[in-house]
Amino acid sequence: MRQNVKRLVRSCLNQYQTRQCSSKVQRDSPFPTSDIKLNSDLCLKTSLSEPVVGLPPAIFSTPDSSASESRITTLSNGLRVASEKQFGNFCTVGVVIDAGSRYEVAYPSGVSHFLEKLAFSSSKSYGDREKILHSLEKHGGICDCQSTKDTFIYAASAESNGLNDVIRLIADVVLRPNITEEEVEFARQVVSYELENLNIQPNQDPILLELIHAAAWRDNTLGLPKLCPPENIDKINRHTLFTFLRSHFTPERIVLAGVGVEHEALVEAAQKYFVEEKPIWEENQSLGSRLEVDPSIAQYTGGLITQEKDLSDVSLGPTPMPELAHFVLGLESSSHRDDDFIAYCVLNMLMGGGGSFSAGGPGKGMYTRLYTQVLNRYHWMHNATAYNHAYGDSGVFCIHGASHPSQIADVASVITSQFVGMSRNLDVVDFERAKKQLQSMLLMNLEARPVVFEDLGRQVLFTGIRKRPEEFIQKIGAITKEDIYRVAKRLLASKPAIAALGNLKNLPEHRAIEEALLSKDGKISRRSRFTLF
Image 1 (tube, rainbow, N blue to C red):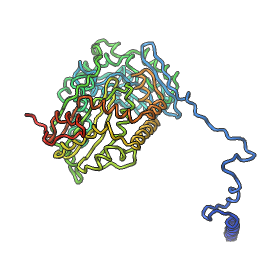
Image 2: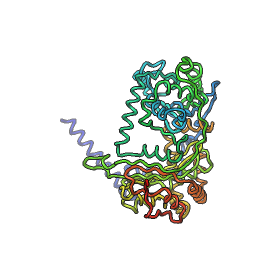
Image 3: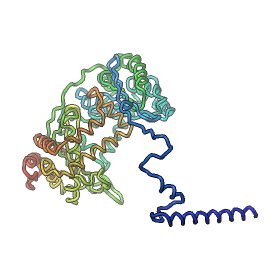
């Protein structure tokens, strides 16, 4: 009891002294009472802009650009190894391969789709997928495989001290897969389910992506489908898959990239598992046959591809999606090696767009042209988004619009007028904002280690070097309004590629769209309607 009384008396004395000190500071200080603290009398006597007397001078860190420089080594078999240091205990490593659906001209379309689903299955050193995943889990790792029109990427992120084990695993699943008949049959089921799911889900973007590529490069290279056509599911077998692997997964077409690793350690692991250990098809000559790789350059054709489809019931329930018809208009742009590539990227950011229900700041596109001039003006437009798809030898710049089928003709007219308007009346504020947004997006994306890995692998694969982000920032800043006008006119000089999906009875004719792109206002005559007769 006596101790509690002492604590109470001591607490009261402390509070009294505190109030006395605070009141003295308040009387002597010119600052508001709310800004005063108990030790403010000392703080007011200390300058924030001059060094503190008696303390040693501060030592500040300086950025070392050489610490993050990319290093590239070519091994004896032609495989390239690229690395970049990065702070942290984790790394991202994998291979980027010059393969994909554009090289399937001599194969049933869908081989890349199958191989993507068969990735990280059983291999020579790993009996099944479970053993592969268990091996990665020992190092806190995850893995993934993605195929595009022109590349295959096998990658894993794990602790840096497990680099050797991760490289061994990636080399095994890429160069020494088993691809058993059971795994092929399972892949058939997965592909079938994926195709069925794509047809019933509200998001039709993957199908539209296939359609616009098929319209832009009809029956050649980039126009070949990435998704396996239903009629080819039973045609693709183990022999076909190994033939594709033997022909395209060769060392000179592969880049082994790593971010957050020591270059010497990566080269040593690559020598061990990619050079000294041979691919399974070299050890067993009966696995597939060797075919010449298609060297064709993408030939842009333009044209119209439509797919009539009932989308009235793709999203039922208490908050169903409205029935939509989709229209995509594309014009030939440039490859990512072209001098105008950066200008097209700025133009893409300037047009921007999105869905009518999107929310967010400038990064979400609220101040882009397709928002301010389309979505904010036409309430019946459900979507208006610009895309620029660039590859090693060609590209397509397109705008996707969606609305109720009864408004599809108006959607086409709005989009053609936006294409025509690109070549004039460019607001300076919008233009400068687009460049800043592109620069910030580039830098923010490169804060993610997997993005740096993919950027490193792709650049080394297609150009042999990796350009630093600072170079792209400088090039973006150097783009002028005249550059935008010039590339916009270059777009309008090409033949339109058109993809449409849904109820298309009100779709304008291809000829009417071409005429609108050549007119001054870009408007399509309402008398023009699509017909099969």
